[in-house]
Image 1 (cartoon, rainbow, N blue to C red):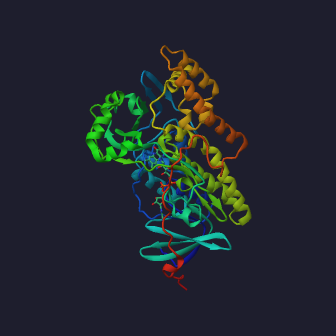
Image 2 (cartoon, rainbow, N blue to C red):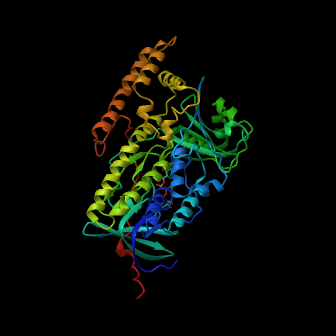
Image 3 (cartoon, helix red, strand yellow):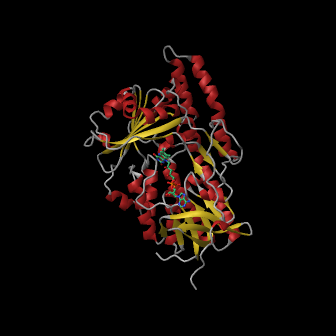
Length: 479
Ligand SMILES: Cc1cc2nc3c(=O)[nH]c(=O)nc-3n(C[C@H](O)[C@H](O)[C@H](O)COP(=O)(O)OP(=O)(O)OC[C@H]3O[C@@H](n4cnc5c(N)ncnc54)[C@H](O)[C@@H]3O)c2cc1C
């Protein structure tokens, strides 16, 4: 790779994982000159549990990464299994674009496949290249300054895309660091890889969700085939205990979940335990004159819903597709960016609220259990509840008013029911349901500040410190 001091591109993208590569591929395929900068070099790991259901895998297929992923030999999960006490659901995932399975490939392996597909499409991915600042002209983003091997360089471009994750320096540079709304997570994540003792059984095709007390536990057939990712989505206050108590606390936590203990009985650990509690969800302003923020840099939802990768891929692709025809017309480009952002919000809002609600560290209530029980009604094995994860229907349509009423009637009618408690819970949920439907019907999501699913006290921390243009001289292009 020959770098000059300053060069031109159609689009420059900061970050070369899900959002960045997905944005780049349609543009590069259309013949646009696209440069991606990433401070890391691939393969490279990322703190994430990386489950994708068919709607996410279909995005891998569209961008040309799926053949590379399949070469890794991942388990292909065709079912969702839910175990809540005596309730057991098992559904096949709905097929999306011909894909009827999910994959769960560690980021170290997955992301290098994305970069490979991106390069095959014709984009220029530059590793160990650290974005420092946006270049501006008359209030418009016109390029970036970055550092590589201790030297500084500039790229001028019609569009600057920040796809640099939650700690987005691009968001800080365009003045969008502070989210306009967000929610405090009630759960943290603790996870590790194990060898799956159920390798040659149907269980190695099932994404398992277990809920008894306040924890949600996932068993996710992973990659290579035979590996299992076991995730505790546990009250955030548990995380320091996982971190300090390590192995002993893990063993105790497994013992408290009998169905999980049975599922992983005999499994050998093949990795260290990893954990985090820094998971506040948020929306940042994500478009402006000559710039856009894709993936986590613009919006992060609680990973309890497992939707971040799918959204980063899908809305990255939609961004690339939306701007290709208008890159040469600044006014039309800015309109397209604004419309893209609105569409992203419309598509992600439902999962955002769902993630906020599922992040509450509560045990499943009698009402939730009875609502869950209604999911067998459409026939054993058919997609229904799993549509929430697969995004084939919005959460508020899958768990709509008629299902809620059926669950409520069953919960109230159960022998020994705490009817007052159940009605109090319903009264608490109604404002959230109404707010979601109001937002959907009348808009009014952006900048409105608060919805009842959102927990106060959230923070995304301080923005990365700015690096000024004057800090170091920028080399000029060779004559
Ligand atoms: C604990 C946890 C569990 C999760 N589990 C799931 C799950 O099961 N399923 C799911 O779908 N989603 C999950 N997510 C969410 C998912 O990980 C993210 O939504 C996804 O990684 C977003 O991709 P991205 O491309 O926007 O950003 P990232 O993956 O964060 O990539 C950003 C890239 O930008 C680069 N970068 C940053 N700063 C600079 C700079 N200054 N210069 C150059 N490059 C830079 C970084 O090196 C990185 O490669 C989880 C997240 C967490 C934290």
